[in-house]
Length: 323
Image 1 (cartoon, helix red, strand yellow):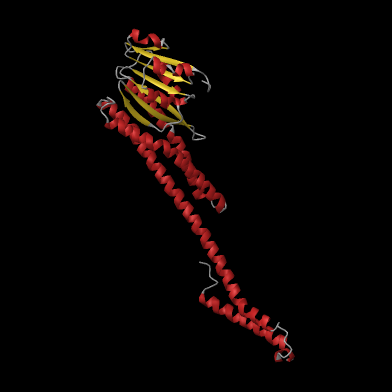
Image 2 (cartoon, rainbow, N blue to C red):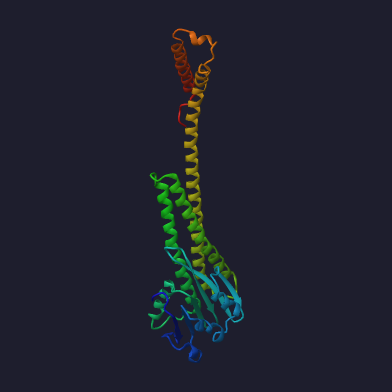
C-alpha cells in the first residue's frame, strides 16, 4: 500500500471465520465474536466516526488528531486507549499508532501507512478460520509485538556504528567526536519511544482493567522483556560512546601536553641565550666586551655550550621523553 492511500478496512471474526471488509456500520448486527477496524490515512470525515459511530471519549479522539503523543495507555468507560509508536528504520522518525479496544473490537488509527500493521493485517486476512484462543487481546499482542520487533534492527545498527568507531584508527578526532554525538542523539530519540513503551507494558501487566488472563499475560510479558532488553542495549551503547568520547578527549589532552612540554623545553633553553643576545645587542659605547678580540666567537661558543649543558640536564631529568 502506498503512503497517502485513504482506507478504512475491517476484519470480522464470526464463528471463528474470517470475514474481510464487511460494512462496519452494520457489523454489530452480524454479531461477530470480535472485529478489527483499521483507519489507514483517514479523512477528517472518517476520523469523525471515532466520535459518532464508536462513541470513543473526546479526549482520546483529540489525542489521535493532535500532534505526536508519547506511548501511553488510558482507561475510559467502556474502552481502553493505547498510544504506541512505529519507527522509521532510516530516519528514526516516530509514527503514532492509536489503538482502541472495547469488549469485542479493536480499532487502530494512524495518519500514515505503517508496514507493521499491514503485516498483521495480511496475516489475519490470509486465514480462513482462527483458533478459539485468537481474540482481540491476541490481536493487540501481535500489533505491539511486531512494532517492538522492528526496534531491534534499529538498535543493532546503532551498535554496529559504535563498534565501527571503536575499531577505527584512521579518522581524526573531530570527525569521530561528531559521529559519537550523532549516535548519542539517535540513542536519545530511540529512548523516547522505548522507555514509554516499557512503562505502557508495565501498566498493562499490573492493571486488572486490561482484562488479561494468565496465558495472555505471558505473551505481553514477553514484549515487556524485549523492551527491557532494548533498554539495557541502549544503556550499554551510551556507556560505550561515553568511554570512546572520554578516551579521545584524553588522547587529545595527552598529545597537547606533549606538544606544550616540547615547546616549554625549547623556550627554557633559549631564554638565557636570548638574554645574552639581547644584552650584547644594546650597543652602549662603554661596553668593554665589545672591544675584545674574538669576543663574538667567545660569546657564541658560550651560548652553544650553555644550550648543550641545559639540553643534557633536561634529558637526564626526562623532559625529552614522551609519556
